[in-house]
Image (cartoon, rainbow, N blue to C red; front, top):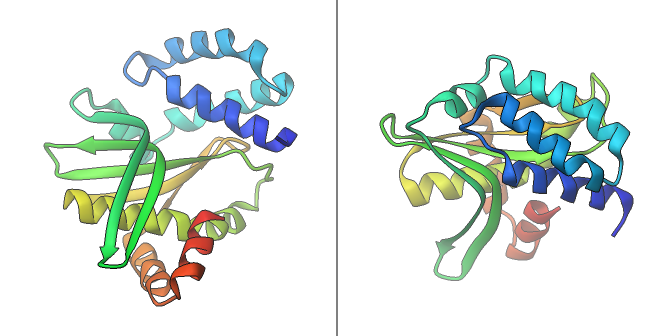
Length: 186
């Protein structure tokens, strides 16, 4: 494991345990409990301030999280048969389902080191993965689905629009299966 991998695993473990329904004070308490196990305590502490602010800012993520009726699933595994010869399997970091609104939200945590102004490069890098997750959840659930990445380095949720994801999925579907796998898996 590299330092970057260990750092990402720590954040994913944190978000997997995140008490989404209990408010930001409960999240602060969880951070305090898990911080000693972080491979980079200073970076986590600095990024937590940004993440905390980003989770509170107006976004579709906040809207989905704030409804007590929505179903929150961390580390949601899926398998979707795209045709008679191929299956896409994945692990969605955060899937929130709004049953009353017949919609869902796919969130993938990204712990890459980026600076302000590098958001679009990060979005483009992960667009194939998010397009595949988005399409799978749509096809499996028949819900309207939103999707995006949350960059811990800047504390920002970056959504993709449906047209962008559909175009990316169509590009991916046209690839030979081995290329499709490598594009999605990164």
